[in-house]
Picture 1 (tube, rainbow, N blue to C red):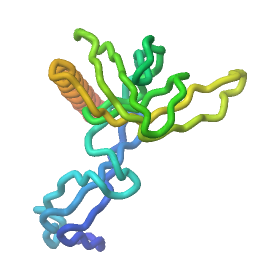
Picture 2: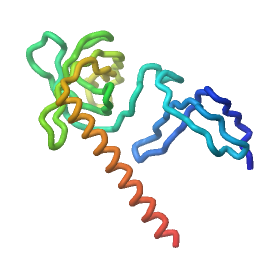
Picture 3: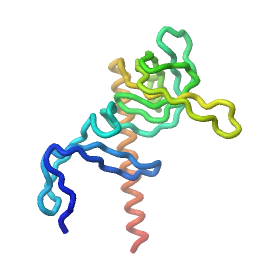
Picture 4: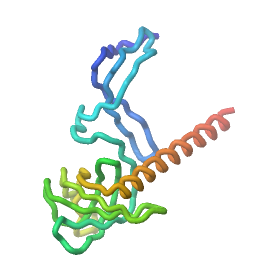
Amino acid sequence: MASSVSLPQATQCEMACSLPFGTVIYFMQVLRAPGEMGQHAILRRTPRVGVNHNRRGWRVPVNMNIGLRRNGAGEYVEGRLHNLGMEGALVSSPIRAVQGDGITLRISLPDEQPVLVGAMVTRVAVPSPAPGKPFSAPILGLEFTQMPRDSQRALTMFMWRYIREYHMQRKKERGADSTQER
């Protein structure tokens, strides 16, 4: 059955992927329009479409402690890394920052030396305090601005390892699901 949705070349669209932790939306651009039955379409990731105007790369969900400091400060403050990509991260920290501030991150990835990354604050959100808690740490959206080559290599290896392990896990789950259906 042919789709009633027209996707001419250069159209920008959203594709949703359901993951265990939620839904990931990819913003795509049609390079080659699909045939009559929807086949032979070619899509590519579009960096600046929809509501995600600034993000250019993938982010993976992580939940780890990190050190961060405002540029010029001497000591690192403990924060929490929520998601991580090659171009940026989402962190929560008691550090006081505003959009445009420079930040240095120290991320201890598994099996690696600490990764040091220079970043700029692109977003600041102050969540409402959770019930029973007097304070919720601000959430900072960060764009990486400076990364030594060894840190870039370590981060790349971490990202690919995470993505590979995630896909292997999904493959096992799909195999288990198909076995249970028999």
